[in-house]
Image (cartoon, rainbow, N blue to C red; front, top):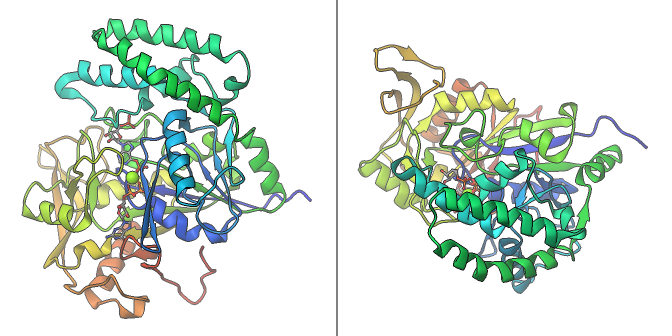
Length: 438
Ligand code: GDP
Ligand code: IMO
Ligand code: MG
């Protein structure tokens, strides 16, 4: 059998990350044979909650908790063996053994301990202009990949020690050039032993040519859900550069990060929060630094799952969202954290920007800096607790109005609304002619 019609569905963030991707991938998992991560690394923090338990996944895909789904760490991912080992140990301690459920691409790039040191030194060198990275060595690891100096998971199997020493030598000269103090080398000594042990553990997992395996599955008619990390506005090419991550977070990144052809892409689930957050530096036109932003942060528990940093909060930005919908070819939308706005009197949505010369634009500009002023539409809030609702029939009129308004602005249906962190707090919205989702 060689089917050409089986598709890869993609779920990706449309904002600046933390849209609730992990939760929704977990919810959709029973509908798929495989869940695969295609880019990013342990800069991601994907939170899942069910049965009164909470898990934060960083490199492991979010499909490990339901059914017999196979999970794949794809070739576009940057993997830190040490953080991966910690993640695996925590999961195993909680009764979730991974070895039979997880396969890792041999072509995924390794994050070395020195990548983390270079990340920190680059940030320090930038001073005020720092990106506010997660400090996980993501930029330096992808820099080595593109510079053709990277080490890949498959390298662990052949002559690794020599390749590792060469890479470390290069990084140490780089660190000197960046003015990193002598402490960096001492720090390396303490990190290195544990890292090398963890790299050994990686070898006990199934290391695969993931592009071959995934395409074989597709030919057999197996269904695949690709899980994005970060968000569209953090994309290396189209995000708010240079305040972005170092991979392609957009849908095209699924093709390059898994080795699947564009004609294999099926549904593109675009996920967004009912408002907007960002962690780290960089432009955020609808950011609120007042009590309303505080309330979003408080109600939404907006603290980074990886670094614990407070997330900046603001109203939903439809200029940025339309741009994200366009870049990804989104086919259906998923809105999370609607419950966070339950007590709000009014809800605003940015429909355009006013530029410094007084013009109105609905295009996301080259430089989305402080000189942009959001133009808002204002809608009434629903002032009702939504967390226990079981179906959209229970939705207050104002929530339905907000959803219709967004659907009209974005010209796409919102198929799922999330009303809480728990797996069960998820409402599917169907119309009669809809095929099922998930
Ligand atoms: P991800 O990186 O896109 O997977 O998102 P994160 O896990 O970093 O951040 C989303 C946060 O919101 C997590 O703490 C989730 O548990 C939580 N969350 C997800 N969906 C909802 C929701 O609908 N309502 C509320 N209140 N919290 C949610
Ligand atoms: P998930 O998958 C939110 C941000 C960092 C920083 C910039 C670059 O959980 O949505 P990096 O460490 O990647 O070099 O940092 O990108 N960032 C994220 N923000 N969610 C994430 O992942 C992020 N991953 C990176 O805060 O601004
Ligand atoms: Mg996150």
